[in-house]
Amino acid sequence: MTGYEDRIPGYLTFRVSPQEGPIAAFAEQEAWQARELYPHLLGVGLGEFFHAREHDAGGWELSEYGTDTPQGARDSLGSYFRRRAAEAQEAEDAQGQKAWMAAALRMDREVVDDLRVHGERFRIVRASKFIRMGRGGPEGPRPSDPDQAEVGEAYRVRSRTKGFVVDPYVSTGLSDSLLKLDLVQFVGSSPGAPVEVRDDAVRAAQDYPGGVLLPAVFMISEREDGQWKAHNPGASDATPQGARDSLGSWLRVMAPFTLRLSDEKRAEYARAADGLDEKRKNNLVVDGVRYRITRVERLVRVGPDGPEGPRPSDYDPEPPVEVHTRQLKEQGLWKEPNDDEPVEFDERTLELKELWDQEEIRRAAAKERRKGGSRT
Image (cartoon, rainbow, N blue to C red; front, side, top):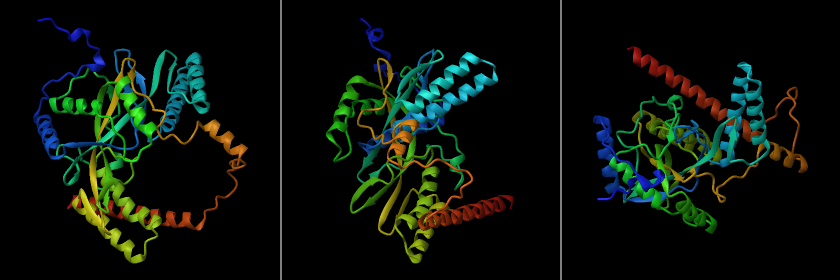
């Protein structure tokens, strides 16, 4: 029999291997069950964007944190270039310091998604997000998902994309390989999305037909008037507890502020948040709205030249910082910073500050109680 595997591009090859260890076997079993219980895949409206560095040995290493806009990732890359310039200066590498700082300044004034700096290649990379849906709604966290953080402490957990390399040559388990196959063939958009969003999705499936799965993240879904939707499509957390902490902050701080809740309603929302903390729930009903901590799958599409970058239709409202500053000056909206001038807050800003101050006091007290409980 003639073998054709060497003629197939690496980005179109799905390498499957057994996943060793009891935890990996348990995760594999859960993934199979998820395909049956939550058979429908739905795209999340907003992408997630990272800056990435190409490895000489193959693949692209992602930045630790993603953003909900391409410009956010560009700004992050500019900050990375400044750190590299400072390191070169400390090492008395004048040529390197000049190259890295020039790249940082370029990011301040230009929309750049792919560039080489001092012999290294960088790119802004797009990850598409998906959720599984079943008859009862979106898939929640799985027992095998890492969830070790204490209540209120999830922000200390390192992002699971730190050091992650987008490399289609890396093998995965059978269930992840099947999921990847499902996702690279998936061409969909949110209901009511503009036609250009759909066209970009079709074009991406053609130009970047391969893919690499990123570690799952978690977001808040809400059901109101019979419909499930993302509570905040651009926000996600590395762990289920991170998403619970985010929901708790919404209930205690942002809901009272944005919804202008009465004192009675504020107390109701706070009690719900307390129950969320005490039982580490993944489902919660407050004031007629059902909230669920939801598992989010992420895929980076890959083509002949590497991972997919931003799409023309991606939400990207702000230009680079120098361009934005110039636009504000032209519109008469720019005010030069003055460190000696006191900052004045309006009534609504002071109200929000008071809510956050109260939340910080509550968190500190809760942390002390946990410490006291652990010593007994």
